[in-house]
Image 1 (cartoon, rainbow, N blue to C red):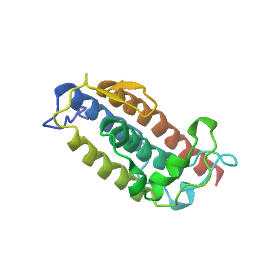
Image 2: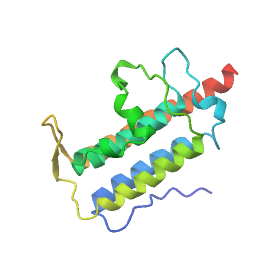
Image 3: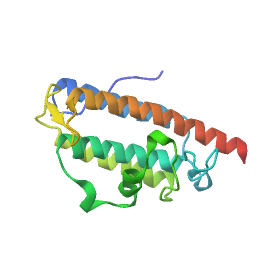
Image 4: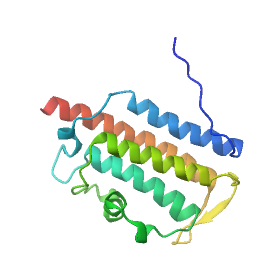
Length: 172
């Protein structure tokens, strides 16, 4: 029998911990659809300039970084750009033109997502869901909204990753 119990991180506001546990569970859910992704599927695109698993993994990592480090903590990541963050900053996700992301094995992207998430989660200690943060454009977001958005974002793009993996498998 399976056990479905959210693993809430300790030391956080209970509502913040619930949202983080939900984010981690969302990732767990879509990862259950495959053990790993072969290297030849990482850059496969269903159409020219379309999404790839690598592009979506880079986007998940970059979006979490931008929301937490950029909006919540007001830090400018431009000085610390690695290839994943640089790709994500140049990406215009709304135009659905993905270009070519950095090639890395799936296990490396996944490790980056987990390590970076673990680091920023620890930085949320002492923050409350109602705290308001302002973007450079002047928009205001509560921490609760940001974390709920990241849960939705993870589920949305995680589902796309699952679908791309299956499409690439069937196309080969």
